[in-house]
Image 1: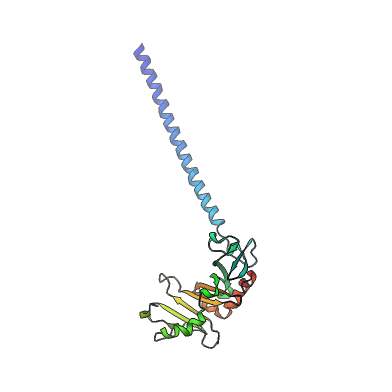
Image 2 (image 1 turned 180 degrees about the vertical axis):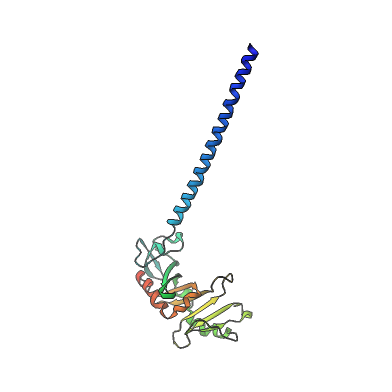
Length: 228
């Protein structure tokens, strides 16, 4: 009798353990599904609440003094969060959106504002440096601008200077080949503002098509913060 009772207890215990394992497996699956759903929801939320595109009229400004000039800059214009503080600053790295694309499409332009004595203007570099580094030949593709390749032997391999040959204060931009063939060339242009500030501009070469209105578009943004 004792043996039969023991066998009955073991028989009862085995199904209980099986049911427990089954339930634990079900709970594990549910937890994993909830975790996946939560991760997906966080990802979607992150995408929908990503960094705002800077716009004219943005608020929440901070005040920085650069090159002796007090600037009031919306926080959404800054490219780097560590610069978001009211104080004297050596430079401000911003991003603006200029209507330089087809049919007035907005294109991003990175702007670094710093003291004028820290950067020579591209117009000054045209005569002092670039002119002496021009290689043979000419690039085409930007109406109104002359495109001259620079000598690879001088360390300018793959770079082209685009400039307006008719203006005494010409538009000048030096553009380097894209990192990969499917990316547009990247251009640099430095201008000096009347306030004693230099603006170093970085943008895709696609924006060169709107070069005639470049400064007009840029003035809308720089004027808003007191940089002009």
